Image (cartoon, rainbow, N blue to C red; front, side, top):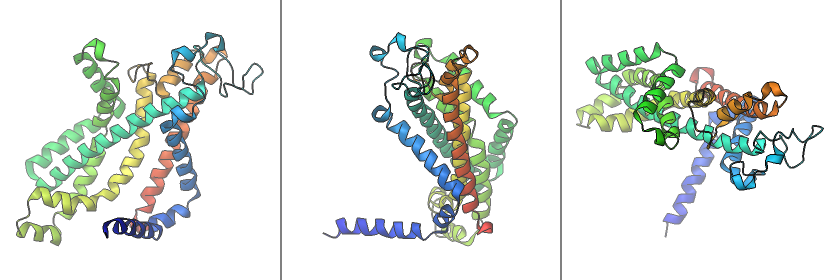
Length: 314
């Protein structure tokens, strides 16, 4: 009988602690963080609820009318109120395409950041705790990867994966290949940061005590060291999300990203770029503005979170 009451009480206690925390106080005192969070939340909600809020389904071929192609924005002389931001060469509503394209960009961004974080944190914990040859090997691999730009690593992995996979499976597995390529290109920052924190934490008294009583290394890493190194990891993940979205947009713009049947913001920009000098600027400009707003707001949130979690600035 006490279980249904205990859960809300724990939730209310957690909310009370969160409202009284230094991070929440810092958030309320930062106008840029509030505006960035609002813009990010608006874009994420628009992407998640795209089937509900989009005026049209831009990928439903039965609903497209070629006579609506290249319609300018609604405020232009030949614009239509049915297409607020105009249409592309196929008659697809640009606003609806942006909402649906944001879903793909955010999906690839979040998935690749999660993959990078899990891989980097795991290797960083192992490297910092084990030391010796294991540490040297993992860090030398990280040093080699750092000598190449992230976009070049992602291009290389994407090209190798497409060469190994059958051609008829490229479109079906394109998003998975993209997530893997971007994830592999970004694990080094997590590994190096976690390794440095683990080197400090493993020599502290609570870790030494855990070793003396016979706790296994995996349990020590999971229960004791990992929670103490997650602060910098969250900051890196927030900033890396913007980098991952930009990387995905770059790959899609170059034609090696997601297929046109499930376009992201980068694919929409690439499609509109062909018509940019033909007077149909809205096909490329509006997806570009949406991409800039998303990346800029996430970057500003990452900068605020870095300052909020820095004890020297409190």
